[in-house]
Image (tube, rainbow, N blue to C red):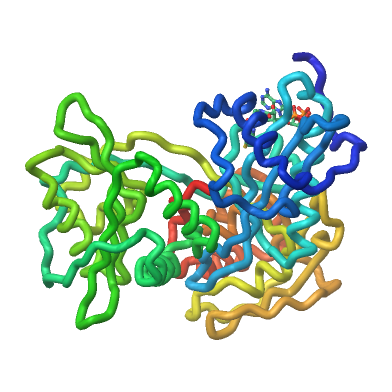
Length: 401
Ligand SMILES: CC(C)(COP(=O)(O)OP(=O)(O)OC[C@H]1O[C@@H](n2cnc3c(N)ncnc32)[C@H](O)[C@@H]1OP(=O)(O)O)[C@@H](O)C(=O)NCCC(=O)NCCS
């Protein structure tokens, strides 16, 4: 296709029309090769979370926002997870993709979502709208014999995957890792819905002194070289020992299968496995982050409490939100930030995408070396590096949404 567009198409987007989820499914078949039959009962985001373009009765463009929170520096930040960006094959290259993403961002900001995350199939589209690559999703295989043994003996019991105790454990763990999601209600309902659908699985919650501290959600599939293939939808614990106990529960399957496939990031697995050199990455995907409301995003996250600083940030450009452009003084104290508009010279300035990468723990010094950043005060670079170093990175996003 030779047609290209550098601006969003001048068309209006609308919410999904009532009863049109089947049309979204049809678009997914065309865009992503979706093979499953349409399931009318599958929990989905509300129609008003979609930005759509119709041609008469035909849905030709779609993007949907999933509402959740994302952890940064130990605090959960309101995030719009952008998903299902799909343009009918015969309507591509006319700016519709950029239009539905642009309008989704505007809607997020109106709803108070200060950041947005997504998994891109083309980074250029999202970069052109202010997103930047922030980290990785990865699937890793670990031999069951390399998982640790239980070092404390939790009390385990089977439960539903959407059990309140499982959700509490997952949420507490998510706070420890930059980029992890505080899963929205709809994702839990979706997980529970899929349960009865021929996907063979089990969920267990582990308690310490009567309080839930670990959870494991296992899925079984056919395998050629073992009784079954094992993957973890969830493998989590509120602290190191609880996570070790969760791993030990999985290792109990070692007579029937060889390895576990998990989206736990390698740096977390390396902390519990004695032989991290044997971990094997199966699959990976980058994820991108956008600061939708720069001031709101800076104030919402947690910061390194050891850093007390006052730094003037310059946001040089933002392709969607002029309100983000300009200078603000970031005052860091006690792990929290205050943001004050200023006309003072910027200590460090860059485009909104570069600031998104830094927000997720990316090196602003490395960005300066690449010429992405204008530096007024070189000492500010080290302060900004330290400010986002909260012991909760590197930022990963282990949940597809
Ligand atoms: C990706 C997709 C949404 C783009 O929609 P579109 O309406 O054709 O895109 P636009 O005309 O608005 O173009 C916007 C930008 O997208 C990117 N883009 C579009 N088609 C692309 C392609 N085939 N390869 C790489 N990038 C592409 C370009 O950066 C383009 O900007 P440019 O025209 O200035 O170069 C569309 O091709 C699609 O539905 N693909 C299948 C599903 C998919 O991959 N969805 C994205 C999931 S994250």
